[in-house]
Image 1 (cartoon, rainbow, N blue to C red):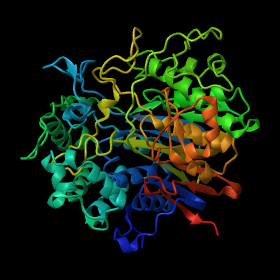
Image 2 (image 1 turned 90 degrees about the horizontal axis):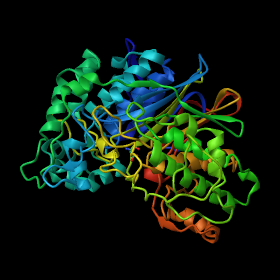
Image 3 (image 1 turned 90 degrees about the vertical axis):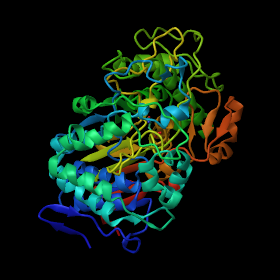
Image 4 (image 1 turned 30 degrees about the horizontal axis):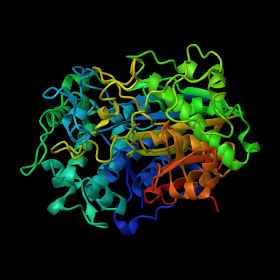
Amino acid sequence: MLAVTAGVVVAPSASAAALPPKVPVAKGTGGAVVSDTVQSTLAGLDVLRRGGTAADAAVAVAAVLGVTDPNVAGLGGGGYLVYYDARSGRVSTIDGRETAPSTADEKLFIDPATGQPYAFFDAVTSGLSVGTPGNLALWQRALQRWGHYDLDDLLQPAIKVAEDGFPVTTQLNKEIDQNKDRFKQFSSTAALYLPGGAPPAVGSTLRNPDLAKTYREIARHGTDAFYSGSIGRDLTKAVQNPPLAANATVKPPKGKLALGDLRAYRALDHDPTHIEYRGADVYGIAPSSSGGTTVGEALNILERTDLSKLDRTQALHYYLEASKLAYADRGRYVGDPKFVDVPTKQLLSDSFAAVRACRIDPIRAAVAPVAPGNPLNPGSCTPPPPAVAPVADHEVHTNHFVVADKWGSVVSYTNTLEQIGGSAIVVPGRGFLLNNELTDFNFTPTQGTAPDPNLAAGGKRPRSSMSPTIVLKHGKPWFAVGSPGGSTIITTVLQIIVNRIDFGLSLPDAVAAPRASQRNTPTVTAEPAFIAGNPGLATYGHTFTAQAEIGAAAALEFVDHGQVLAAGEPTRRTGTSAGVVRPSR
Ligand code: GLU
């Protein structure tokens, strides 16, 4: 069923009949993958089986997701990758976040005609929201550092799936349907995703020959074809002059991204964030994402209380309060460190956590929003200064996947177009959607009289919440986790870590458990099952806003006898596809 020709990995047949079912949990040896779609998981497992590293498999998975999960992944987006390298025993990260055009400034989203910010819908569905995509540069960098295969080999599975087509899932159909008013504005997008004016039917075969051609061009000519060649030219043209449909009802503001911006793009090697939590070492992504600092700060705060000794309701109260405090600090201090001084070390210091932790009333929720602390001068526990109301971050979706190889190297990689369907602009003739990542900048200052670290500037990366995480115990990988979900990503990752370490749930149970997200807002966003299952939290003063689903995690854990337990979602977002190279009996 699987074949390899002259080192070229060939994907399995994409026909529905040949596809194994999607399973959320798998256990075995030889390597593991957990990703959104069956085809991407199979492609990753095939690379692992053929001696590829976790980095090799991750590139194959990400490229296939660009075909089968096109609204949240692919060439038009960016992401962050955390890597545990079994050879060196080190954790490293690559920042493939999108950048703003060099001509951008903090008025990027201010309409010059009115002096007011653009309406969010207009800003999102426009070239203005598109940043230089970083995924491809990240893939190349990961292969340079840890790969056995070349990029051209690893794009072959995606080329095959794009060419043969794949069965449209209920999730893909739903996403296209939810975005049809945006997708019909652009002729290239409508042609690909609204054939005959409607989303492709569930179970029908969707082919993307333009994307196959684009991947082929990259396979042949390398990443330059994208960042300085014909693909880049087509991309910037689509940003500056979006291909409006004849019956378009929007007049989107034009984007400024130019070929020079693409040429200047680099995926960045960063040190990971690191904190110790109850004897484990938690590694995350440093700014420009707020993931590592916010998850890490909240864990540092929580570590001062032994949650396992508390009644579960009170332990969850601490979880919500720690998250509330960490979010206040995220808003005030985290942005692209090339442009603002981010006190990463201080945000993750135990002395700061001690002062923040003493703000938690053991039996009463603080009225949100709470004010940020001062990591540079933590002081002692004094009454809180007035708070600045938080800005609602959008809770839309991206994707996260994890890979482990037979040597024990691990990838935890979150990648995104920002909103489902990104900017809604498919680059004509190229078959991929462009991101709307620049809308992760704050459109106007949000921090009152204090500076806002997340305003747009030329070449700047917008602040992210993506939180790909790898946890080590005794210097060896223990588990890896991440999730989509906009600003709820941070709390999803935090909650899974607390579920696993403090509450002792198995990893599949930690992932499946009902979720709640406290992001320094007056009410806690929570899944209905969490609200129903934790009535006692009301007595602590927590109030809830229900949200059907929060996040869609992918995780894996090293368990007994060298086995890996791959754990995805049983139901959220129609489930995740977990697989291992050699299943245990
Ligand atoms: N753009 C979001 C971020 O970087 C991720 C997209 C999402 O999951 O909503 O935080």
